Length: 274
Image (cartoon, rainbow, N blue to C red; front, side, top):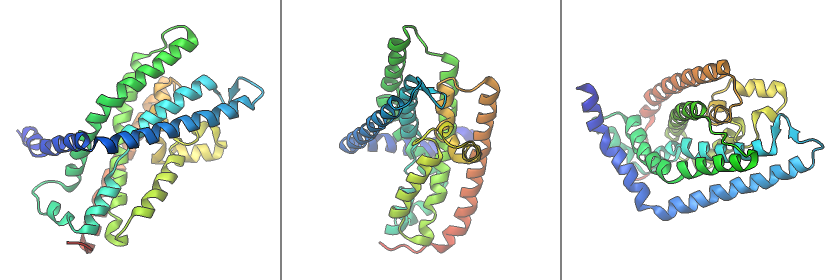
């Protein structure tokens, strides 16, 4: 009964998220094209790097591995991206957050289920084509089917955990708007830092051993690097279990941080709009 009541409360937010994605198709298409262009730019950058090396491999990656890494990283980053920081900061700035606070539902759950509606649309539109394209590329290069069902299913589970970590991290970061009032610049800075620390810009394996070890213990490696390496079959079974348990740990930490920050930050509400 509690679960049915829970779903009845938050299902409309999921539907609203799906309708928003459909309504703003031009925004979705432009954003997607921009991300794809960035992905191809990185492809040519890494192609130049591999062409300049004397061997076929670079830091344990072949060029074919790098192509798969780039496109699966793009897919992972796109699906785990959370707009919580911008959305919360905007509502705090214009005062509309007051309407959410008086509703008889959890503040973060409203955002979560609304984003889930958007993610469902993204999965339907881009997830399958990119996975099929990557697997077709691997088939053409190797001459045989390289698709691993187990790794794919584990990747999906890791992807879900990565999204939830990203969501609660961005929600916590968004609550900084209670103090700073405007997070536009801080949000851009955060995205650049997270992309670097998560291995989305440069694989952690390419970094100095000490730095790679430090970054692997931070939550950001769980956002991109862990799911992608699971998909590519770069981890042993023991490493997969360890990395996914590490994701669960950081998810619990991020949820706790978001609750603590919310309790303190909400006392400082001072909207700048109506």
